Picture 1: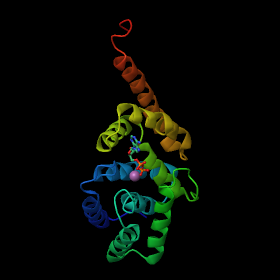
Picture 2: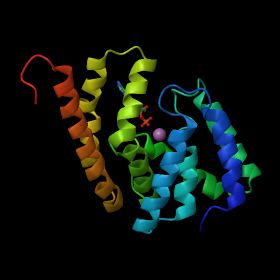
Picture 3: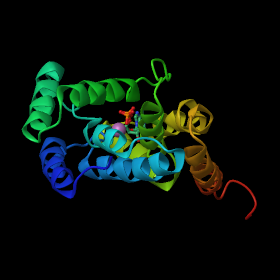
Picture 4: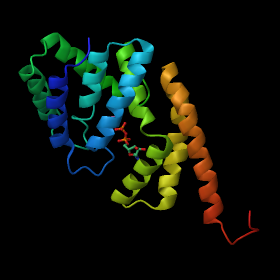
Amino acid sequence: MVLSPEARNRIKVYVSKWHSHDNTGHDTSHVQRVVANTRVIAESEGADLEKSELAAWLHDIDDPKLTADQAEARKSRNNMLRRLGFSEERITDTEKIIASVSFSNGENVVSLEQKVVQDADRLDAIGAIGIARAFSYGAANGQSMDETLRHFEEKLLRVKALLWTDAAKKEAVKRHQFMKAYLMRLDEEMNFGEGEFR
Ligand code: ADP
Ligand code: NI
């Protein structure tokens, strides 16, 4: 099953409203990239496209960074799905996938669709886009450059090893290499003038 164009458009409008004015790295463009990643990964892994895409669109609606009231956010999300005619079973299923996406340790991830969406979300934290998001998060939260660089060591350089699916792993290799090259170059430029020209 795939998401109908009509349902996709209505979900997109709902999500855009919910994610407007975000400065925590969870804006609508993040969601759109996670959906795009999800579709590629789901296709390649043979996961259910509708289930995966639905969860991808809605995966950050109840993020505590975006909403003060998580229960209210979930209620609004589920009511929106009801209005679109999704069954209670599909709504519960979507909730389950979303709940597992935010578990950073991968606990509770059992279905293929959970793996697909979690991988899709994690891919958006690495590579060129990952670098952009990390520095914009750092700026929005008044972090020093060193603090943001620590986030690369502690989290972003470890993402590649945490992925489930072959499709995501393959893309992660490229994004990881790019981040490493960027960090080396950054280090050179930050120490520019202290040593020889390289
Ligand atoms: P998720 O998308 O799983 O909710 P987070 O909320 O942890 O992830 O992160 C959202 C974005 O902000 C990611 O791109 C992440 O790398 C970035 N980010 C989170 N914490 C930090 C930090 N301390 N320094 C720099 N970037 C961060
Ligand atoms: Ni996300």
